[in-house]
View (cartoon, rainbow, N blue to C red):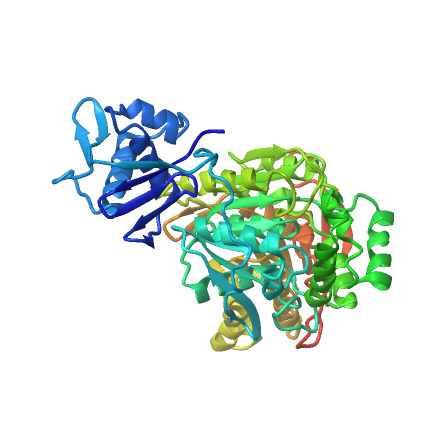
Length: 571
């Protein structure tokens, strides 16, 4: 372990051990990579540091440009009141490198490490104010804290209580340290914790809406989305569906398929039995953190966490809904830089769950740690994981071009007519056609891609909305004895200006063509993504879809229940 130093110059103090910088005693916010660079210059102040050395030590020999280095040198100077003209502290030696030239007084701070930075949080931070974001008619509880240079949204596991988090000393310390790395918004999902109870648990569409609502309320145009455990599925789907708002993904102890969590019905039943008999006692702690199983204080807090996070009935309903989760098909559509963290012996989520995420998300980086604990704030490697998160946040690209997105396509074809507009006018008039089509699209937030001949093409940012829109159109046009054949598929689309293209459009069209006699047919991808939405399916069998090489299992949509309106049924 290296001896860490505290550097004093002018009115500034840089503590390499606690990874902090102060001006006249006031702590300054700083991007981690900028402080890394400043510390390196201070540690080597007796000589000129070549840019190749900076690339090796600060960027670990990753490919970066001279322009990136110049921008970081500029940021260092701005941090300590310097600039490129005066070069009072940091001098550029043209053709050679950089040198810190001001007089420096140094004191040793003991055995703290300089690289990587240790977790240095205090476990006594007061809980931040609870705020509420409006998502439709539901209020989502969230907290905003931290002073880091990056926005980060923390999506929790299957139950949470954001106020209670801060009563647990190790979790308090973990959150406080995370707040040193980013400006953090964390929330309770609807139906859990401090968020509004709901008559029916939400599907992924509504959960993504809640993430957006929290981001809007917090003033985050874009953010890194960090998903913990079951929250990793939500984070991944959000990142694929809203690439323009997702700066990066961090997935801890997460999975794409539910069987990484509970591989058999019997293992899931054991959890149900615990919830029915012992929920709120904290006796489940060993299932989440075996290394802390004998900690009575943590078990007491864990029991309170269970009671505050959800009622037993809600917890069981959540797990029944979660048991249908499978986002594996959408992983290749994720464009955001992704960091996957997982312990190899995780007692709750099998390591293969994390490996699958890393295998199918393009460019994802998997970091495995030894240990059995599932809770991120328990274990011997907590500091190492936080340091990895710090490096990931520091290396995020500053400028990305979004040319692809995940969307759900609805192709609706009217039978018995060659012209959709003529058909609608025969059924009523031009205004009624607008009401039938565009009102349905507006109601379910659909985007009209094309309306030509007998075919309507629309795109949606959530599969449940696309299915409900299709059922609404079938029902509305059915009043005039006009059958509609609809196909729904979720896939990746290319985005160019305001146009959308891609094989997903062709697949949706082929699926619609199979809906003989009317109705709504959906791909398995769609079915897997709408767990908890109240939508029911009948098996439609395997069919050859020209755009893919193997037969696809398809499903006929039977019913879409809604807590606020009558069911939409296939006619």
